[in-house]
Length: 208
Image (cartoon, rainbow, N blue to C red; front, side, top):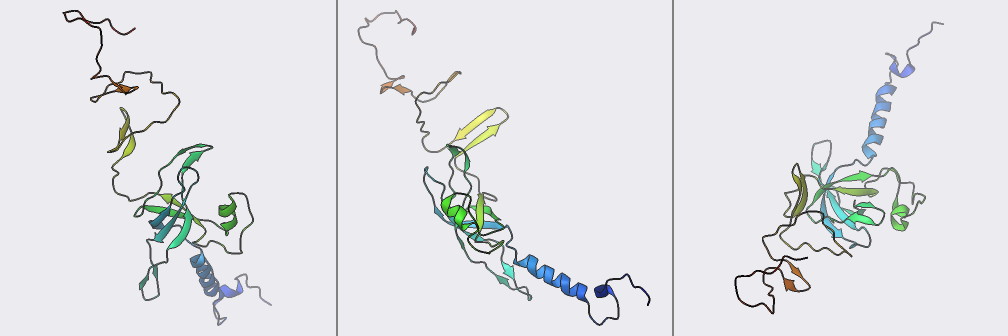
């Protein structure tokens, strides 16, 4: 009997194309894997400074049927978001509604790990589901009104509000210049006066 080294599903004249069927099924499985994609923040449940919060996000890339008709995806609720943190030190910039970011999808159901914040078994047999994701922002957002910027000449801090520093001690090994006033213990650097000084052309001694 002659030997044919061509796999059965690739042979011509068999009346069946198993290779096409297998490729179709593989493609179907790939389509079921939740893709990482751009999303827009719809709601923020911030955890203040004590704990990182959650966001509700709307996927920005619609699904399409075979006729090319677009079908918007549903909002994904209670998605943990990224906070830049190491130990007890963090840079807290919580997302805002309207922000655009990215979701990264877990391979398994991470509900228990999110709830307990401890290594945990998967909560179900769910795999690559869009509800098992985390939010990383932001992309494609408008220019900020306040920011910290690294430039070739140094660091630039811009805010329309107030910069508040809460620390035990602030040490600056540099010259400090300001166009405004400086107060210490309620005493103005520009407006303070010295008592017990007689009028004349003499000046007070420099501080020592």
